[in-house]
Image (cartoon, rainbow, N blue to C red; front, side, top):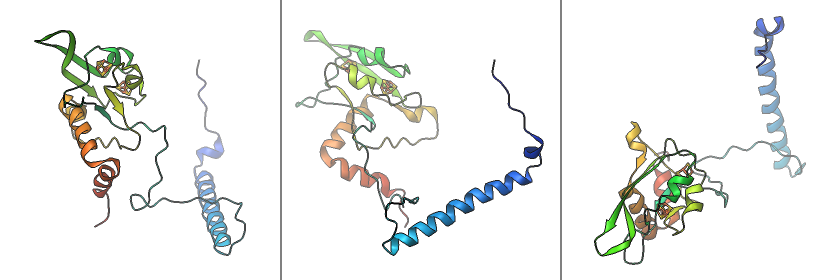
Length: 189
Ligand code: SF4
Ligand code: SF4
């Protein structure tokens, strides 16, 4: 059974805790200021002080392991690579991939997704769908920001059109330009 911690008399007074919080904040502030001043003078370079990244003007590179937004890849002829095998949906721990398979009239073996949807509000960006896919048909590219925006649940459901257009857009513009377009919405005017 979970033990519930009770507040002591000292904590119930609140004021000492407020003072303690102010002391911690003040200590961090003056410590950082002191160390940054020493760095400016070329001293104590082995000591680390907190840095604030002025995003989006400054950027920290994404780690190589970063998983960006999903996209469905295309073949050279522009057709969808996905064969609606359901392996990604089966591997997905969040059960947020919905696929409806369709059949080609001239190909009795291979299928394609009539519908392919990812509910990104349920997605945990684990990348299992990418690992499960035998056709390299779904990717989460390093360096492409998820950038999900919307006002209702359905705004966060990415369908086949969105997911395939993303591949075309990435091919046409490249990661850097896409990222610049994304952060430009947040830049100060
Ligand atoms: S990243 Fe993980 S949770 Fe998201 S769709 Fe893929 S398998 Fe599901
Ligand atoms: S994306 Fe890959 S794993 Fe998912 S249904 Fe299509 S081919 Fe199968």
